Length: 390
Picture 1: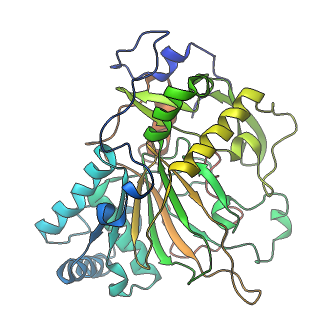
Picture 2: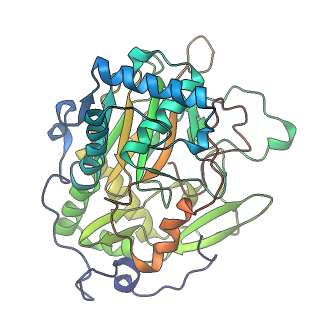
């Protein structure tokens, strides 16, 4: 990660990748054109749901059995150890990466619920399938977590030692505003183990940031100026130490493509994870930018079509996502349960701005131990990152 304080260089120098061609003050890319720009029902399930046939499901299950027989650690699952033995399926999965990086930025792989995985098999399948789409998995340097469980932990007894820690957004049922998970990885992958049932909430929404960018570029470019300023006061939590301040922008560019890394929790705090009183507050201009982006996101978004067993893939640099509040029944916790990882595909990955390269690269630090837990038994100690989620 970067040092606690970052110098406020010009937006142009700090935001552009080394191959960008913009010159200050014309630092903003022109309006984006192509499939990355969409709104509402222009992105419908027929355009992003990829179905698995019975042979595909059989081959994935066979690959899981091979992993279990070989005793392969989950951290060592990759394209070689997760042998699907089906070139057509391998090509189908690899093509998803291009959809994410060069297309609409959203894909859903459907049909795995028919395999009826147990908990261990689901994690193996998730890691194995993802390795064909984006072979590199991120490990958060704060929580030291590669795979996390998105679930309701709000009704679990809180240990005395954890009373002041708070639950991360991935462990609570509250709604989440639109955001991109900051410096967490290029692609968010989610495996729907349990959708919580009908009318239980937890709806997922996605929106093209390129569409938002185009709208702001035409009607309110000052918001983009504010997002590009490297003065946003992110509070970064530390284990057993005081939090520290990291200044940075929320808007970057990659060869003319805007990258959004806007997340509210480390800027505003949450009801369960409070912002330290010593941290500076966001400015009025920054608060206006937060509201402007949120309103446009609500205007241009679509609800993600979700079924049990789905594997969802969202390009975290060009797509913002949000979640509706969800709930259990009869005073019981919600059964909603998703597995989540952050991924990168070096072949298709967007180039990152040079000055911030270390931040984008940190989750993929070579040699960092990977933790892919089958069961989430400790939602307080292992939360889900200090720069992410909500």
